[in-house]
Length: 154
Image 1 (cartoon, helix red, strand yellow):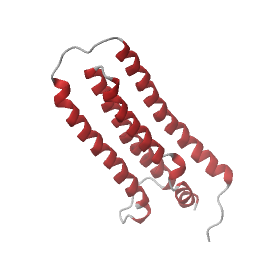
Image 2 (cartoon, rainbow, N blue to C red):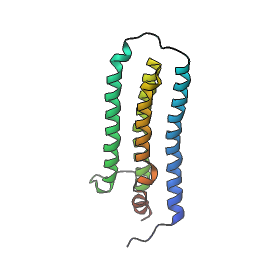
Image 3 (cartoon, rainbow, N blue to C red):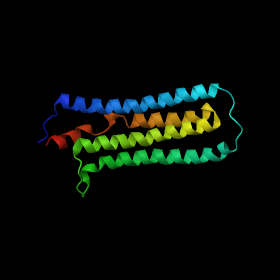
Image 4 (cartoon, one colour):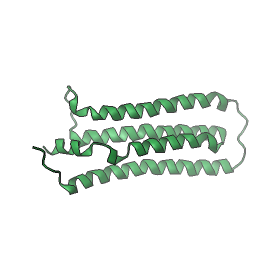
């Protein structure tokens, strides 16, 4: 029988994840500020590397975005795995959340790296938009928290 979870237990679990998630969002904001200040410093030094690296960075960002979505889908199947794991319930979900958010964060990091190379805010901006959008898609309230808490409290 599925009895309702205590609201305090769910709130505490969600709150912890929200703090971690907000730290990821905050770091994207810090990256944006740093690159805005850098782009105000003037022109970038001449380099031909930027034209070569742009497509590589875009491909890497696309792969990271895809990996975050695939990893998230794998979380939905955590209860159905046949192999035993050492972590239980909510601890597994927390790790899955952090890995997914890290994949999203890596997209913003690629953008800031490209921005450091080119000194162009426009090279960075699409990366941070994609990263923050994915972080919003993977926000704590979108995860099956209750299912994992129920499993742990059994």
